[in-house]
Image (cartoon, rainbow, N blue to C red; front, top):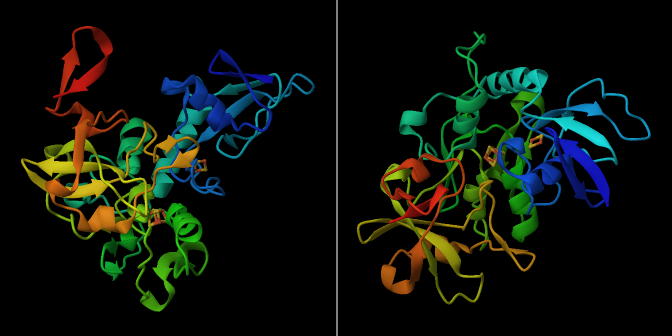
Length: 322
Ligand code: SF4
Ligand code: FES
């Protein structure tokens, strides 16, 4: 085991642990935000730069500070390393610049975007964004396209985090989806707009940190904070059958994976509980599910601030869903 200190909190972790994962073991505000890293998708990270941290001391052997900010999702901890996240002015300043950079092409269409309320970029803009933008050029624009029967791709909103490409690569057979071109011409696309019809392709919607990939069966039906999330399960032969169903009264508007406080799919017994397209898009009848109870949304989301939550008098720092 090796020792690392993050924001003045010391923790022992196994060798080979990234700074991000060491911070997640501590939890709370110490954890840097992540827009491209996704722990259940190996190979993700290193693209968006939102997780930059300052390394005030490299290790016990070589305690010199690192000259530049480092990406915490891809940098391994060293014994005696001292990391600053929220305690570093440099980090806060640079994260503001990263948000400005991510918003160069991303439209400010939150009022009509289905991701509003659970969008990582919206949250990041709120916590680290600067007022106004210095960008005066035209944003790049695309027409929204259907990729397959179930998914709508709106490239204007894409921040090129490549999470969906890793889903296509790792969860589906016969991949037809990926990134075309390079640099600021890069776009997420299916090969000659072929449909993405693999059983697990719907998980791309859940991993997309912004509203670039949305569920065609739920698009524009309701703002997410008007829906009531419930843990539900079904007998499914393709996936775990464990999902969250989003209800409006008795009507089911959408089905998603169960996600943790980082917006990542929950992992049980070492296995991520991805759901199949049948559970996500075709089982929209309450009779097809066993409702286990209200879903506590533990991530920073307007859903958890809504009227489904009320303070628990026994615990000040947690909330119950009615
Ligand atoms: S479509 Fe979404 S998940 Fe895919 S690269 Fe763009 S932002 Fe990332
Ligand atoms: S989360 Fe680390 S670079 Fe994107």
